[in-house]
Length: 244
Image 1: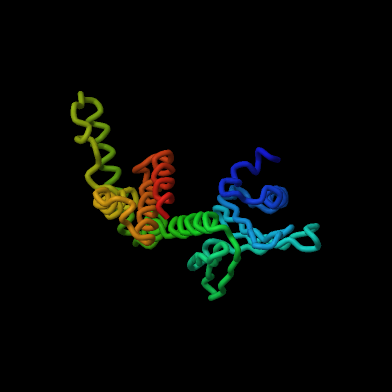
Image 2: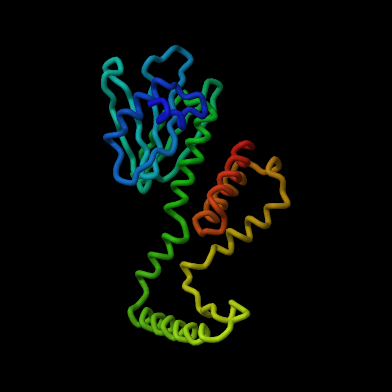
Protein backbone atom coordinates (compact mmCIF):
# COMPACT_ATOMS: atom_id res chain seq x y z
CA UNK A 1 0.00 0.00 0.00
CA UNK A 2 2.90 2.37 0.75
CA UNK A 3 4.17 2.06 -2.81
CA UNK A 4 0.67 2.72 -4.12
CA UNK A 5 0.23 6.01 -2.21
CA UNK A 6 3.83 7.21 -2.50
CA UNK A 7 3.17 9.15 -5.71
CA UNK A 8 0.45 11.22 -3.98
CA UNK A 9 2.69 12.45 -1.14
CA UNK A 10 4.49 15.14 -3.14
CA UNK A 11 3.24 18.10 -1.07
CA UNK A 12 3.23 16.68 2.49
CA UNK A 13 -0.25 15.16 2.36
CA UNK A 14 -1.26 13.18 5.44
CA UNK A 15 -0.11 9.60 4.67
CA UNK A 16 -2.87 8.05 6.80
CA UNK A 17 -5.56 10.09 5.03
CA UNK A 18 -4.13 9.21 1.60
CA UNK A 19 -3.97 5.52 2.50
CA UNK A 20 -7.58 5.50 3.69
CA UNK A 21 -8.82 7.33 0.57
CA UNK A 22 -6.92 5.24 -1.97
CA UNK A 23 -8.10 2.00 -0.35
CA UNK A 24 -11.73 3.10 -0.69
CA UNK A 25 -11.27 4.49 -4.22
CA UNK A 26 -10.37 1.06 -5.61
CA UNK A 27 -14.06 0.14 -5.81
CA UNK A 28 -15.20 3.58 -6.97
CA UNK A 29 -13.01 4.24 -10.00
CA UNK A 30 -14.57 3.63 -13.40
CA UNK A 31 -12.95 1.90 -16.36
CA UNK A 32 -9.94 3.86 -17.68
CA UNK A 33 -10.26 6.32 -14.77
CA UNK A 34 -7.00 7.39 -13.15
CA UNK A 35 -6.34 9.53 -10.08
CA UNK A 36 -4.42 12.66 -11.03
CA UNK A 37 -4.05 14.50 -7.71
CA UNK A 38 -5.26 14.33 -4.10
CA UNK A 39 -5.50 17.34 -1.77
CA UNK A 40 -5.94 16.90 1.99
CA UNK A 41 -7.16 19.46 4.55
CA UNK A 42 -4.67 20.65 7.14
CA UNK A 43 -6.50 22.69 9.78
CA UNK A 44 -4.67 24.67 12.50
CA UNK A 45 -6.06 22.35 15.17
CA UNK A 46 -5.27 18.64 15.07
CA UNK A 47 -7.74 16.95 12.73
CA UNK A 48 -7.83 13.17 12.98
CA UNK A 49 -10.16 12.76 10.01
CA UNK A 50 -9.59 15.61 7.49
CA UNK A 51 -11.69 16.12 4.37
CA UNK A 52 -10.01 15.42 1.05
CA UNK A 53 -10.56 16.17 -2.63
CA UNK A 54 -9.59 13.78 -5.43
CA UNK A 55 -9.14 14.87 -9.05
CA UNK A 56 -9.24 12.14 -11.68
CA UNK A 57 -9.21 12.33 -15.47
CA UNK A 58 -13.02 11.96 -15.43
CA UNK A 59 -14.35 13.80 -12.36
CA UNK A 60 -13.89 15.60 -9.03
CA UNK A 61 -14.57 13.53 -5.90
CA UNK A 62 -15.09 15.08 -2.45
CA UNK A 63 -14.28 12.68 0.41
CA UNK A 64 -15.68 13.44 3.88
CA UNK A 65 -15.02 10.95 6.72
CA UNK A 66 -17.77 10.36 9.27
CA UNK A 67 -18.51 8.11 12.25
CA UNK A 68 -14.99 8.58 13.62
CA UNK A 69 -13.48 7.61 10.30
CA UNK A 70 -15.27 4.26 10.07
CA UNK A 71 -17.19 5.39 7.00
CA UNK A 72 -16.89 8.11 4.35
CA UNK A 73 -19.22 10.16 2.17
CA UNK A 74 -18.29 10.60 -1.50
CA UNK A 75 -19.74 13.30 -3.76
CA UNK A 76 -18.53 13.52 -7.35
CA UNK A 77 -18.88 15.99 -10.23
CA UNK A 78 -18.04 15.17 -13.87
CA UNK A 79 -15.63 17.52 -15.64
CA UNK A 80 -18.27 18.21 -18.28
CA UNK A 81 -20.45 19.75 -15.53
CA UNK A 82 -17.64 21.93 -14.12
CA UNK A 83 -17.74 25.54 -15.34
CA UNK A 84 -14.75 27.10 -13.53
CA UNK A 85 -12.19 26.55 -10.76
CA UNK A 86 -10.84 29.03 -8.18
CA UNK A 87 -8.15 29.28 -5.51
CA UNK A 88 -8.23 31.77 -2.64
CA UNK A 89 -5.04 31.92 -0.61
CA UNK A 90 -5.44 32.80 3.06
CA UNK A 91 -3.03 33.13 5.96
CA UNK A 92 -3.80 29.60 7.11
CA UNK A 93 -3.89 27.52 3.96
CA UNK A 94 -6.02 28.09 0.89
CA UNK A 95 -9.57 27.51 -0.25
CA UNK A 96 -10.09 25.54 -3.46
CA UNK A 97 -13.51 25.85 -5.05
CA UNK A 98 -15.24 25.15 -8.34
CA UNK A 99 -18.55 26.07 -9.89
CA UNK A 100 -20.86 23.88 -11.93
CA UNK A 101 -22.99 24.70 -14.95
CA UNK A 102 -26.03 24.49 -12.69
CA UNK A 103 -24.60 27.47 -10.73
CA UNK A 104 -23.50 25.48 -7.69
CA UNK A 105 -20.26 26.44 -5.95
CA UNK A 106 -18.40 23.78 -3.96
CA UNK A 107 -15.45 24.63 -1.72
CA UNK A 108 -12.95 22.90 0.53
CA UNK A 109 -10.88 25.04 2.88
CA UNK A 110 -7.62 24.71 4.80
CA UNK A 111 -5.84 23.14 1.82
CA UNK A 112 -2.05 23.82 1.92
CA UNK A 113 -1.16 26.47 -0.64
CA UNK A 114 1.03 24.22 -2.78
CA UNK A 115 -1.66 21.55 -2.93
CA UNK A 116 -4.31 24.14 -3.79
CA UNK A 117 -2.24 25.44 -6.68
CA UNK A 118 -1.70 21.90 -8.00
CA UNK A 119 -5.45 21.23 -7.72
CA UNK A 120 -6.18 24.42 -9.65
CA UNK A 121 -3.65 23.61 -12.38
CA UNK A 122 -4.91 20.05 -12.84
CA UNK A 123 -8.52 21.28 -12.97
CA UNK A 124 -7.65 23.89 -15.63
CA UNK A 125 -5.88 21.25 -17.71
CA UNK A 126 -8.89 18.93 -17.62
CA UNK A 127 -11.32 21.72 -18.54
CA UNK A 128 -9.00 22.87 -21.32
CA UNK A 129 -8.79 19.30 -22.64
CA UNK A 130 -12.57 19.24 -23.10
CA UNK A 131 -12.31 22.44 -25.15
CA UNK A 132 -9.37 21.27 -27.27
CA UNK A 133 -9.42 21.98 -31.04
CA UNK A 134 -9.50 18.25 -31.79
CA UNK A 135 -12.81 17.80 -29.98
CA UNK A 136 -14.26 20.87 -31.72
CA UNK A 137 -13.14 19.65 -35.13
CA UNK A 138 -14.86 16.30 -34.60
CA UNK A 139 -18.13 18.16 -34.14
CA UNK A 140 -17.59 20.16 -37.33
CA UNK A 141 -16.91 17.04 -39.40
CA UNK A 142 -20.17 15.46 -38.23
CA UNK A 143 -22.13 18.53 -39.38
CA UNK A 144 -20.70 18.54 -42.93
CA UNK A 145 -23.27 17.89 -45.66
CA UNK A 146 -23.16 14.44 -47.34
CA UNK A 147 -22.34 15.99 -50.74
CA UNK A 148 -19.23 17.69 -49.35
CA UNK A 149 -18.08 14.48 -47.65
CA UNK A 150 -18.37 12.59 -50.96
CA UNK A 151 -16.27 15.22 -52.75
CA UNK A 152 -13.59 15.08 -50.06
CA UNK A 153 -13.55 11.28 -50.28
CA UNK A 154 -13.06 11.45 -54.04
CA UNK A 155 -10.17 13.89 -53.62
CA UNK A 156 -8.48 11.59 -51.10
CA UNK A 157 -8.88 8.59 -53.44
CA UNK A 158 -7.38 10.56 -56.36
CA UNK A 159 -4.43 11.68 -54.20
CA UNK A 160 -3.88 8.07 -53.08
CA UNK A 161 -3.66 6.97 -56.71
CA UNK A 162 -1.04 9.65 -57.41
CA UNK A 163 1.01 8.49 -54.42
CA UNK A 164 0.94 4.87 -55.61
CA UNK A 165 2.30 5.94 -59.01
CA UNK A 166 5.15 7.95 -57.48
CA UNK A 167 6.23 4.99 -55.33
CA UNK A 168 7.30 3.10 -58.50
CA UNK A 169 9.91 5.77 -59.20
CA UNK A 170 12.96 6.86 -57.25
CA UNK A 171 11.88 9.68 -54.97
CA UNK A 172 14.46 12.18 -53.77
CA UNK A 173 12.08 14.76 -52.34
CA UNK A 174 9.45 13.34 -50.01
CA UNK A 175 7.47 16.56 -50.15
CA UNK A 176 6.46 15.61 -53.71
CA UNK A 177 4.26 12.75 -52.48
CA UNK A 178 2.49 14.65 -49.72
CA UNK A 179 -1.25 15.32 -50.31
CA UNK A 180 -2.07 18.90 -51.22
CA UNK A 181 -5.31 19.05 -49.23
CA UNK A 182 -4.98 18.25 -45.54
CA UNK A 183 -8.10 17.77 -43.34
CA UNK A 184 -8.47 20.60 -40.87
CA UNK A 185 -8.58 18.37 -37.83
CA UNK A 186 -5.06 17.04 -38.55
CA UNK A 187 -3.53 20.51 -38.86
CA UNK A 188 -1.60 21.71 -35.75
CA UNK A 189 -2.98 24.76 -34.07
CA UNK A 190 -0.87 27.47 -35.71
CA UNK A 191 -2.07 30.04 -33.20
CA UNK A 192 -0.73 27.92 -30.35
CA UNK A 193 2.66 27.44 -32.02
CA UNK A 194 2.94 31.11 -32.92
CA UNK A 195 1.96 32.17 -29.42
CA UNK A 196 4.49 29.78 -27.89
CA UNK A 197 7.33 31.01 -30.10
CA UNK A 198 6.44 34.61 -29.36
CA UNK A 199 6.74 34.13 -25.58
CA UNK A 200 10.25 32.63 -25.67
CA UNK A 201 11.89 36.03 -25.47
CA UNK A 202 10.06 36.92 -22.24
CA UNK A 203 11.41 35.43 -19.01
CA UNK A 204 8.98 33.35 -16.93
CA UNK A 205 9.69 35.47 -13.89
CA UNK A 206 8.25 38.52 -15.71
CA UNK A 207 4.92 36.84 -16.50
CA UNK A 208 1.75 37.30 -14.44
CA UNK A 209 -0.19 34.37 -12.95
CA UNK A 210 -2.72 34.52 -15.80
CA UNK A 211 0.07 34.54 -18.39
CA UNK A 212 1.77 31.57 -16.69
CA UNK A 213 -1.49 29.61 -16.72
CA UNK A 214 -2.01 30.54 -20.36
CA UNK A 215 1.50 29.40 -21.19
CA UNK A 216 0.88 26.07 -19.46
CA UNK A 217 -2.34 25.63 -21.43
CA UNK A 218 -0.45 26.28 -24.68
CA UNK A 219 2.08 23.57 -23.84
CA UNK A 220 -0.82 21.19 -23.15
CA UNK A 221 -2.25 21.92 -26.61
CA UNK A 222 1.16 21.30 -28.18
CA UNK A 223 1.30 17.93 -26.40
CA UNK A 224 -2.24 17.01 -27.50
CA UNK A 225 -1.41 17.90 -31.12
CA UNK A 226 1.77 15.78 -31.05
CA UNK A 227 4.13 18.78 -31.42
CA UNK A 228 6.05 17.97 -28.22
CA UNK A 229 6.72 14.79 -26.26
CA UNK A 230 5.33 13.94 -22.81
CA UNK A 231 8.77 14.36 -21.23
CA UNK A 232 9.15 17.85 -22.73
CA UNK A 233 5.69 18.83 -21.49
CA UNK A 234 6.48 17.60 -17.96
CA UNK A 235 9.69 19.68 -17.95
CA UNK A 236 7.86 22.84 -19.14
CA UNK A 237 5.08 22.23 -16.60
CA UNK A 238 7.51 21.84 -13.71
CA UNK A 239 9.39 25.01 -14.69
CA UNK A 240 6.20 27.10 -14.99
CA UNK A 241 4.74 25.85 -11.71
CA UNK A 242 7.94 26.90 -9.90
CA UNK A 243 7.02 30.55 -10.69
CA UNK A 244 3.40 30.25 -9.53
